[in-house]
Length: 171
Image (cartoon, rainbow, N blue to C red; front, top):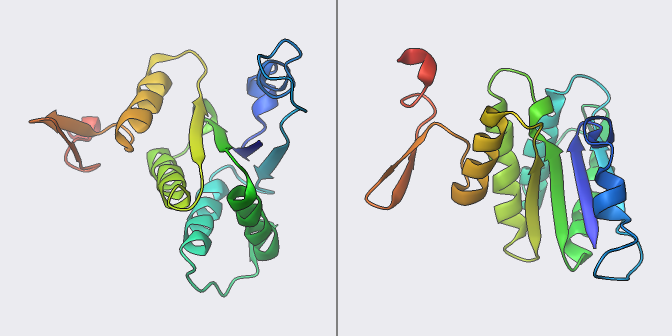
């Protein structure tokens, strides 16, 4: 009953997202359209990493001295967490293909950790949107199945994640 759109304007990269997912008239469920809360940064897209990290800290009840993070107030982030906790089922959506900056996979990892933290007391899912290219899709599948971005290996049925050891640039 709540969708959080992170970081970028997902409607510019996925113009039919609202039509097909949020306010679909032919949906199996005939409830009112799902409210969408946009969490956009005022500056660079890289700022979303800081915002997600602050949300992680607030979700864990960690003290925070800053009152504004990347143009977003602490009060707004706290109210957003309250909306997520009050929702029956929240979905956090981001456009993985628009995360074009160094170490963006760490941002995805922070999103997944936020979802895991929130799932201790409520129901939250992650929904990465891709642009049809294979690398974005494999990152999304890896995050969905393992909780980690790529740079992992599977050994004896376990996932080993090490973003330095499994870096393709070092090979």
